[in-house]
Image 1 (cartoon, one colour):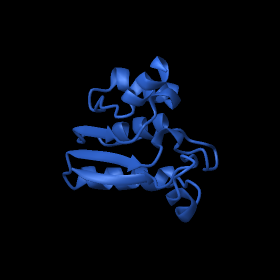
Image 2 (cartoon, one colour):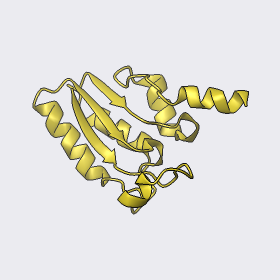
Image 3 (tube, one colour):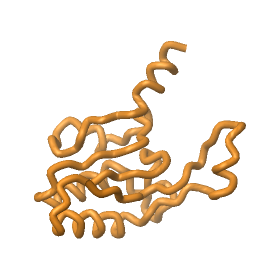
Length: 126
């Protein structure tokens, strides 16, 4: 398994959190860099890649053209047919774009692990 960081910082933070102030605003790694890294790893025989970072569903908001996470996920899976699994970390299901939702529904290689789901339930129940 290999981790590929595509969203290294968050824009929003809890009022008591000082870490985001030290690391600065969120920055998305350009889509072509993430895409090339994922394809290179797949070609080297890595069977699983985890896209990781802080607030992945905001991916691309700071990039020219504003590519979204769903577009990145679909392009990686199209270009890397040997990749067995693609996993996402730290996503906010409420902010998932239509392409990402479609990928979860139609692409068996995208692992349906949604770690932020408990947070959504708490918001609904509150």
